[in-house]
Amino acid sequence: MSTSNFNGNMMMVFSQLSGVHFSFRKVFFLFSFVIFLLGLIPTAQALGSITAVRIWPAQDYTRITLEANQAFTYKMSMIKNPDRVVMDIENIDLNQIIKSLAEKIQANDPYIKQIRVAKFQQNIVRVVVDLKTEAKPNAFTLTPTGDYKYRLVLDVHPMVDPLMAMVAERDATNVANLTPDSVAQPVASETVESLPVQKNEPIEVSIESPEVNGQNAEQNSVKEKAQPINDSVNKSDVKKVGRQIVVAIDAGHGGEDPGALGATGSREKDITLMVAKKLKQQIDNEPNMRGVLTRDGDYFIPLHGRVVKARKMQADLFVSIHADAFNNQSARGSSVFALSERGATSASARYLAKKENESDLIGGVSLDDKDPILARTLLDLSQTATINDSLKLGKAVLAQIGEINKLHAKRVEQAAFAVLKSPDIPSILVETAFISNPEEERRLNDEAYQEQLVASILLGIKKYFSTNPALAKSKLALE
Ligand SMILES: [Zn+2]
Image (tube, rainbow, N blue to C red; front, side, top):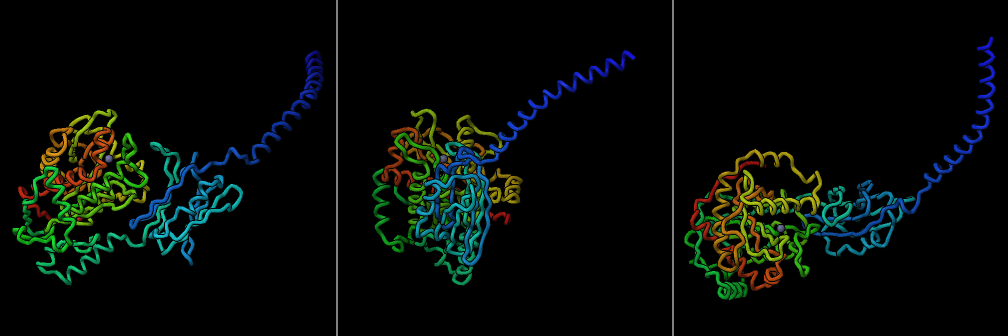
């Protein structure tokens, strides 16, 4: 059979050929196996490096930030007796930078006693955070943003929100001690203990305070500062006092979020804090007004958190202080912004709101910090009435700032600023000046100029109240 003979011959040739191929295949598999084994051996290049560590201690919470050149893999656990947080960070090199965490803890940190860093297992670095008291840790990671690489953040929160504890204490004290006189007294303490409870009485404000032209304002503030707080109460200045006006003063940026940077290195977050503290001081010197700060140190608060704080403090007004940069160094002048529900009033307002809203990305917000129920409630409420009040307030403040600095825009601009979204508190954002303009950067650092600036903001606030006395609005029950 020719067909079977042909098949038999072919089989013979094929088996000879495959014998030769088999030895090649053996070498190939052996080679692949060696490569595979090599791949299993960890190499130095696979380890990530910590490039920076930062600690932001504050009464609100203490934040620890680790920054690395690659994404973090970690496990967090909480151990009792004594209370400590353990962070096991994988595939990271135990370098000098991460070791330096131990020296960065300050003795007066409200929540952290000490930090220990050591190699735990092959390629695992263990960071132990010893707590001073029971606390709530919250860890999360952030992907590269702005100048930052990958970040691992550990926030150590107190068990009870310090603000809520103060509000509860204040309410208890007020129920016990509430008299017309005690309500009218200004308060020397930095806390919110003595904030008034009821908000339904009419407010009248005397605006007999000095005209804001540099000299007078400066001399006056020096005079006021020299007086003991209790002597600054001049009841004849007050026509009628129902209760104190509470102004929430929001120092923009802070902590991980430096804000804009000036040509000579000034950071917006430092300028805004200095100005905010001065504004609080001048407001507290008024017999019937009280300033409360959303932050009083160098730490970050999410934008939404600032809104929540102002509401918890039962603020009548919200003033956010900024000093941003513009890509053009010659841009200068002050401006005032309010919220818009329907797009921005100019391209520059839209640009600025977008930049300001990026604060959460740079400062670092964990998903836990976002309160979905409150966020939805805030969105659902029409803010038209509050925005109208915000515009009136903004106009009054802008007119006064116009007396001491060039204005960048002659009218109050509007855009979707997240920090201005209080549904029931008239809110403005004051761009005091451009930190990117060398001349304005110099003035922003000048104490006398800061005093003039806050005197003009205060006068604007007082003018707003004098023309809109029926401010009392029932608070919306959101909480
Ligand atoms: Zn800003």
